[in-house]
Image (cartoon, rainbow, N blue to C red; front, side, top):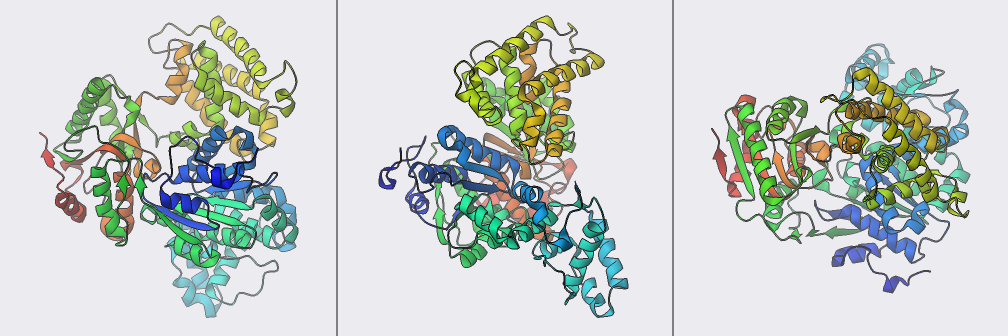
Length: 636
C-alpha cells in the first residue's frame, strides 16, 4: 500500500531537520553536511520516502553507489532493515563494483577495437612503473610531444589523465601529448595482451564506453535506475564523476549526492577538487546544507568548527543534538616522554573508565594518522596488563584488511551461522540478520512452500552443526588446539558452511561479490581469521567472539575511521613522526585531522610522545587547540 507523500513520516527516528525535509522532497540535489549530521541516514530515509510513496514505482530500483565497501554495505543494511519488502529494489554497491559489473556483464558490447579476448586480471601499477613509462615516452615518443610528455605529472597520470579520458570507439591519431600517453598506456597494458591486467580506473573507462556506445543498454540502465544516490561524494574521482555524468546526467534520472567538502581525504586517489560545485553545474542540482549534529556534544562540535572554518570560511556552525554526560574537560592533550608510558597511561585510563561507566571496550577507539602497526605492540601489551584486548583494524588478513573482512556481508553471514550454531537461544538479533541474508541467497520458493521456509532450512542446518560441535570438543590446552588440528577443524567447518549456502551457486549469482574470484578472496581471508580464532579458544561458544573481537579496543588509521563514531577517541601521535608531511599539503593534512577530531561523541584525548618527534611540524594545529582552550597535560 502506497503512502501519500504529504503523510509520509521518517522511519526509526523522530524527525528530520527542516533542510533535510526540503532535500528529501527535491529532485536532483546536492546535500552537504558536516560530521555526525546523518548523511547515510538521510539517504536511507530518502529511499524509504521514494519506495513507500510509490514515487519509485515497481519494478524500478534505486541505485546507491559509494566510495568504500563498508559505506555501501552499511547503507544497504539500513534500507533492508527498514523496508524488507522493498529490499530487492535497493541496490547498494561501490562505484568500482558497479562499473566492473558493467564490464563483466556487457563486455561483448565493447567496440571492436576494445574487445576483451578473454578474462582479465585486477592489478595496480606502481609509481615507479608510471615514472618509467612516462620517462620512456618523453625520450622515444614523437618529437612534437616529448617536451609536453615530460611535463605530465606522474602522481596524477592514472587518476586524473586516464580517469577523465573518454575512450573513442575507433581510436584516432593523438592530437596532444596527453592523448598520446593515454593511447600508449592502453596499447601496452591492455590491447597487447590476451589476458590484460587492469585497474579500476581502466574498468571504469571501459564501462563508460560500453554504455556510451550502446543506446539500448543506456536506456535499460536509466529505466531500471531512475533514482541514483552517491554517498561520500567529496571523494568522487575524475573517472567516477565522468562515468556518472556520461550515464545519468540526463532527463529521467534523479541524482542525489551527499558528503562533506571538509572530509575530502582521498585527494591522493584522484578525488576532484570540488565535486559538489561541478555536479551542481553539470546536473542543474539544487543545493542543500544540513546543520544538525547527532554524534558529538556541543563542546566537541565547537572544536570541530574551528578546523572546519580553516578549510572553508563559509562553513556553517553545527548545532549538537547530544547531551553531554562526561562533565568538564571533554578535550585534552596528554604529553609523554616515552611511547611505553603513553601506552600504559592510555590503557589504565580506559580500564578505569570501563570499570566506572560500564561501557564496552568497543566504545573507545585509538586512531592515528598512519603506521598504526608501529603503535600496536606497546598498546597491546599495556591493554593486556589491564585484561583488555586490542584489535588492529588496519591489519592484513589474506588480501583484505581486517576492517573490510569484519564488515563484509559474506563474512558476517558465516560468523552469524557459527554464532547461532555454537549457542542455544538468546540470539534474536543474530537470527534476524542471518535469515535476512539467507533470503538473498536461497531459492525464492523456500519462502512460499509450506514446511520449506528459510527458517526451517536454517533450523535443520543448525541442528546438524550443533551435533558436530558436541561431537568435536576442542583440545583442553590453555592455548587452544594445536596448529595442524586447527587447520583441519577450519577446513571442515568452512566446508559445512559452503555446502549449506551452495557456494558455487551464490558465486555465480554475484550475491556477495561481482566475480567468483572476488568472493574467493573474502573466503580465504575468512578461513585465515577463523583458524586463528579457533587456535585461541577452549570451547565453541567462544568462536564468534574470538573472530570478531567485539570486546576489544579498536586501533585504526584516520582513513579507516571515516564514517565511524566512538564515545571516547584517543587521537594518538600528535607529533612530528605521524605528521611529517603536514607542511607539504597543509589543506589535505588538515582535512585528515578534521576527520579524526570528528569521530568522538563525548571525549577526545590527543597524545604526543617525545620519542616520535617534537610537535613543531604541526605548530599551527597546536595553536588552534591552544586558542580553543584545550588543556595540555604533561605526563611523567
